[in-house]
Length: 328
Picture 1 (cartoon, rainbow, N blue to C red):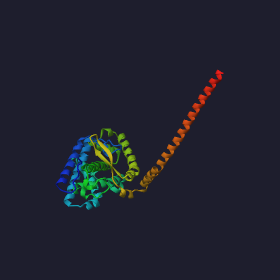
Picture 2: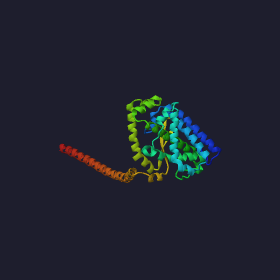
Picture 3: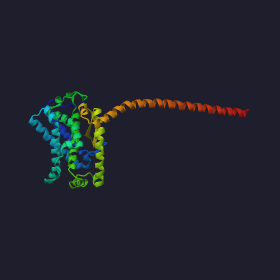
Picture 4: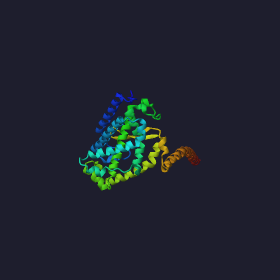
């Protein structure tokens, strides 16, 4: 039987939230290696450092939830303040993560300053995409499923599976923690400084100990982010789906869930619209092209079979005629 998320605030919801956080913290003992087809900034961290980063994010998320309850914010307030809430959570998670590395404040002065979110295409894009997932997560946790006004999920809001809320939490955890580390490393001015930071505080994944491996990783991420910005992101919107990240027993994996993204489509740039236009043309041309190629293939096969059969008959006739001539 499917376990359903409580519809309203109360004891049942509190127990479900406690179980949700307990369950995800238990998953930190799993393998946290990245088994998706793309790279994450957290790939630079060893398993222990990745656990510390995730724990820092969850601790700040728990504080945020308590603040929302204490301030008595409504679902409408959360929607209005959503972007600011996400940015503030990332800042505080970053500070907590850095504080966990060293007791002195020198590291905070060096790595705490944040760039403006609007100045970075990658940062702005990821927050804009996953703020909706995070917004739904907060509403589910604070108010229950009855406060969700969304008829595009494939199930009624009052029949929301608890596993769906767990997916929202794990995705928010991994994606926003990834941004936390991105901001930390973005504060470094060179690869040498990034390497020094990762090695000094024993954070580094053994695969990226050398400057060369870091340079390769950074270049690959730059290329990947461009592909995501202009191809994968508009394609996901056009297909009405979100890419979610989950912590499985084998490691971090990627899946897709359905969600209507009409509002996101309105906000696409001209370059991103070209991707959708290309997909439209592809959807229009490829079926016709496949049909034409299929017909051509049948024609070529028919001609080939006829040529072979006629050639075979001709060869038989030649052989029989020669045999007949010899007998005479």
